[in-house]
Image (cartoon, rainbow over all chains, first blue to last red; front, side, top):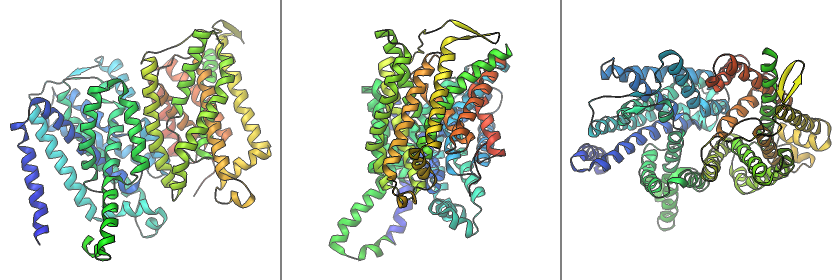
Length: 317
Length: 290
């Protein structure tokens, strides 16, 4: 009983504490927290689709960048909420198109497509800006300070985790798990394979687009080359994997240690950043294939199992 | 003008075909989806550049070094990195996911090393850069040489694989890794060889491309993307399909860049890819799979 009450209380308390953070934090620390919230959203949204289906999406920054660039184009002409809605709509349409073209087929087609999607969108936008509008590079003048962006991202991250928790309990959330385990069984038990995958992909991409859109005023000056930075896709995958893409809180848990590490690495080893990152990535794939949470649980299980015997099974459920 | 564009496209396509052939060997036979393929290629291109500028070694000599070196290094990568993943994976899907992730990490390591050593500037050198008149059009000698060498390598490999006993064992593993051991084929050894040959072709392709294209340390990813698309367009595991699709891609890309806009090279490739996916998902030359 106590545990049942404890969890929502903890989440509410944590949320309130995070919301109050701008009061105490310095500008630098708050900027760091903005990145943390943005990556919590990205990694959780990534895991929402790629975790259960095991389709590795390398296209995070395609949606994130689309969101950011939409704000850069429209922020002067439309009111802010409408700009966010437009960004969301563009992200949804792009994801639906990509999903419908590739997710009906074997997973590899999707991976190949997602690998180049960001570069494709970047080239198309650059071409359009140079040849049609004639303005490459845009300024965003929105009356937002760091804490405003932080609160928006905190809300989005909270919403993403909540949505993830909710989807897990619905048929939409159970279906991809079956698909990930065995596509044939899934198809035979009446799951619409392609529709489920496309829907989850669209939801995940929509959240990524919003994260980019909300964070864009932080840049002030935006260019396709800046917002479509492939490192974002890379970091999202590595964070979700470290925490465990199969768990609701896994990606969040992966974000925090890695953000601290990246901050330290980029300050001390700016030239070796991608080498160290790549090596870390390979280590995670080899040592923690299911993420830290599963590994910890495995260790605890074996440690407890020696002392308590069978009671663990009951305690777990 | 039209004929010149066609020739330049064909030459570019020749190297695409070679690199895609390498990827097809790695994915079709060794079952490893290697996202760092283009980095091997760029590394070889830098080798050719350094040896040409530093020691005056012509790229065609470097090619003789790059092919076995690419083979050896890829053999090592397979043994150290991929083999444990192959052993661990319970099924093909899991191996695909693991190999994509591991080579994605490898991509960043190799790219980081090259950025550190060579910087992010575009590099090129001038070798055999005089025009040769061919059917009334002028084409640079280096392009022609690269085209002839890549086609020789590609078709040579094709003949080896389709006509020899050794090639038959490779095809057997590609077709059914589970049944190949029943007829005495060491799947592990064959997979290692196929992966190493793939790396060797990437290195060869890199040396050839460096003769007529400007390249940069971060440019490998785009080559990987194009090679992946060529492999899928040609039909997974279909070597002749990969060669033809590579040539076609080179021609189409050259036409788009010279008549529409050079910034749209990748976009043109992707539009082609989408058309193929919607129209013939099994690839232009592939056979339908369940």
